[in-house]
Length: 475
Image 1 (tube, one colour):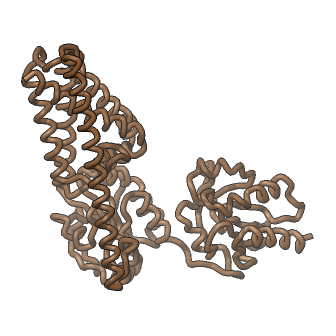
Image 2 (tube, one colour; image 1 turned 60 degrees about the vertical axis):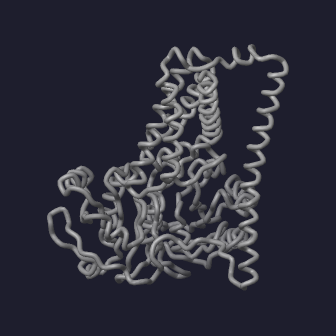
Image 3 (cartoon, helix red, strand yellow; image 1 turned 90 degrees about the vertical axis):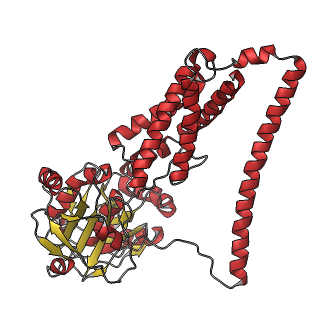
């Protein structure tokens, strides 16, 4: 029995030791996994660090006999927590990646993973059941009691076991690779195209939007047809009770309704008790919320996860399904963009924030010629052009147009570019779409009357040539 308990401790120590080290090696992945399981963002960062530390402490505590029982208690508690979190997600129809072993292995959760953790919990429970004074043999004591030949035999056995495990792992991966090659060969022999990418989520573009009839929070029946008669694009936003990401997005959803109400109908669709949803809507100033009974509308639109959203125009699907708050935010930005402009058109109203958080409306570009430079810090061509832009900023010509940079990318990456000119943030390339820029770096000239004064110049040489020409004409 002592040897069995020792082997059980070593198995648990090995599993949790590998899991803890793997998670520490991939902290961003661990934090994302916690967020996917519904942990609020403010807690995901500290828990993403504390969880692997806890796993490593439990793994180390399992090795000495004096602390093994406490280590088993910690492992059992963690496993029961994992089982509960996975079961709740699976019951709700969500399958986030477990990220159990960091980048070493990560896959969507399933009931097989719940059963695996239950088996490990039984092993930990067996050690706990034996009591704190009976945790099995000591690893050092066992090795000290062995003769030299027994020690050599045990070492060889362990080496053979490790080698066998490695060969088994390599064989599994080799068989998978061989299977993929066979499928590819078969597809080529049958002249069948090899799929290179999965279709976008949601219903096909331009297909008929599924009709629905739901009650709002006042009990009034609302249909897709009644919404479509208002003549605006419709954004259906699907949420679920208990979805922390959904709740965190509600203030921003209410802001969209207030700011873009004249151009876009934002319709949140949730479920649950009307009283609870009324309180939530009243807290954030949310409007037009509809309640489904059992995800019938979400299923009709293939919205398998939340938060998610889809755009509808004239009762037809106008976008792929946007998954997550950031993707929904981008969908809203493009849904409310003004029509694109060309040379001779007035610059439309388009509000963008700068690196200090101050909002500027491009329609206010009047009184001085402006060169709008479309930028992306992750664009290699932009990086090649960066020294020329910085030189232009250091030594501006007297009659040169004012430089205004409209950039995609994260603010911290943009700050590293060292621009002296004002930079407006365009993370979803909305302004680029309005001006038909087509790529980065590119630029367009705006005259003193606030009109588009040039075609779009694409590429570093073309942009610099436009700047020089604009300066020469003014001089």
